[in-house]
Amino acid sequence: MADAFFAGLGGISDAVARFSAAASAGVGVNESGGQALLKAIDTMHDGVTDALAKADRLAQEPPLGTTPAAQVYKPFLATIATDPVQGFIPAMRKFQEDLVTFRADVEKSMATYEEVDQGARQGITKAGGPTLFA
Image 1: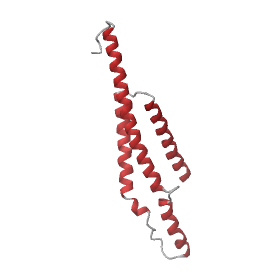
Image 2: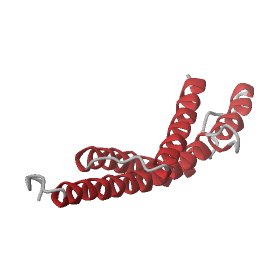
Image 3: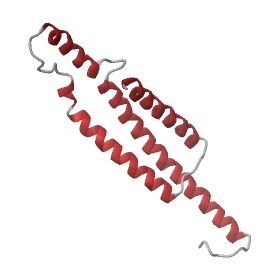
Image 4: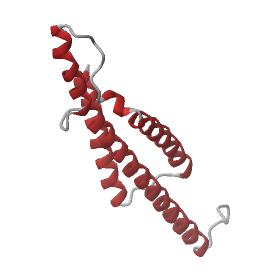
């Protein structure tokens, strides 16, 4: 299950990178689609931020007792949260950074869409077309 979780986060990072490339290439997102994306991004970012604010608890060894098995598991469970390569906390920080990047790219794509749309409206008007878009 943990592998699927981290694979999912990796997939999100890859998708954010592809969207960044598309945004840099001039792909536009309309206002309604962009607002829906921004709302979802903000909701996820708030959740990740809240989880990270409580993450210090995950880095602590849980009170499992003093049995030999507990002595083995306690440091292991804390490591799961903090491991720099595969830990939950570093993965959530990366996800938080990805969401910030994604939000900025969505805003950039919305601006691109608006610029292209505005240019098209002006072109139609200059050509003597209908002024339905004015």
